[in-house]
Amino acid sequence: MTLSRAWVVLRKDLALGPRSPIFLYAIVLPVALTAVFQLAFGSLFEPAPRLAVVDEGSSSITAALREMDGIDLTLLDDADALRAAVEANDHDGGLVLPPGFDESVRAGDRPPLDLFLSGESYAANRLILTVTTLDLVRAVDGGPPPVQVDLVRLGSAGLPIGLRLVPVIMMYALFIAGAFLPASSMVDEKTRGTLTAILVTPARVSEVLVAKAALGSLMAFLVSIMTLWLNSALGANWPQVLVVVALGAVFSSLLGLVIGSLAKDGAMLFTIVKSSGILLFGPVIFYLFPDWPQWIARLFPTFWMIDPIWRVAVLGEGLGQVWLTIAVAVGIGLALVPVIRVLSRRMLTQLASAS
Image 1 (tube, rainbow, N blue to C red):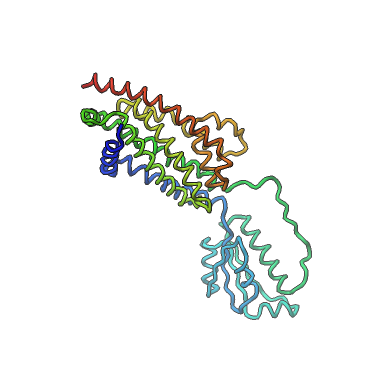
Image 2: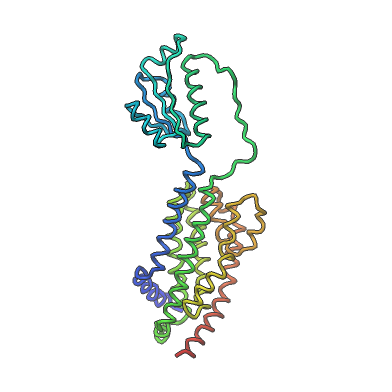
C-alpha cells in the first residue's frame, strides 16, 4: 500500500464531496441541531429574569442592579415605553424610580415605587424580581432586613440541559460526517461502477479504504470541533479536546468502513443505518438522564467514543483521567480492522462477480 495513491483517491473525494447532499448534510445538521436545542432548551429551562428600569433620579438601586449577576438589566428612558415592553413580555418586570427616591427613603417617607410584572413571565422570575427589589430598597435605607434568608442547596448540582444535549449533537456530528459520509461514498461508487474502475488501476482496495477513512476522519474532526465551539464547550484545555475528538473521528470512520463494505446499494445502506441506530445512539440517552444506571451505557460500543469527549470537553477532565476509556476505544477500533479486511475481500468478490 502506498499513501500517494490513497492521497489521490482522497483528493478526488474532497473535490467531489461538496456536490453530495450527504456532505452538506454532515455540515448543516449539527449547526441546525445546536440552534434548535439552544433556542428551545437553553432559554426555556434557564431563563434569566429580565428587568427593565427607568431611573429618573440616578438611584443607587440602578447601580446595584448593574453589578448583580443573574439579572438581565435593560435601561429605558420612558415609563410608558417600559410599561408597553413589559406588557408585551419583552421584559419579565419593569421598575420606575422617580426623582429623589433614595432621599425620600432615607428621610423615612414612603415614596411611590412602580414595579410592573409581565403576566406571561415565569412565576420564579417574578418572585426573584420582587424580592430583589424589596431587598435593594431596604439597602437604600441602610437598615437591616427584617429576616435573614439562608439559601441551602439540596442535592447535587446538575448540569444545564443545554450541556447535557451536547453528546446528542456530537454523536450526530461524528456519525454523519465520520461514518455515514464515507459509507455512502463507497456505496455510491459501487453502484456507479467507479470503484471497479479505480481497482483496475494500480490502486488497491486497502488504499481506497484508507482514503475513505481519512475522508470520514477529517470531516468528523472539523464538524465536531465546530459543534463544540458553537455549544461553548471548547475550554482552556482545548489541546486535550482536540486529541479526544480526533480519536472519536477515527473511531467513527472505522464504523463507516464496516457499513460501507457491508452495504451493496443505497437501500441496504439505509437499512443498516436504521437497524443499528439504537446501538450507535443508545449511550447519549444516559447523559440526558443521569439518574439512570450509568453502567448500561458502557454496553454500547460507541460509549467509549463519546465519553472521553464528554468528560474532557464538557466536564473539563484531563487525558490522564480518561485514559482507560480511551484505551478501550482504541481496542475496539483495532478489533474492527480485521473485520474490515474480511469485509473488503468479500466486497472484491462481489464486484468481480458483478462485472
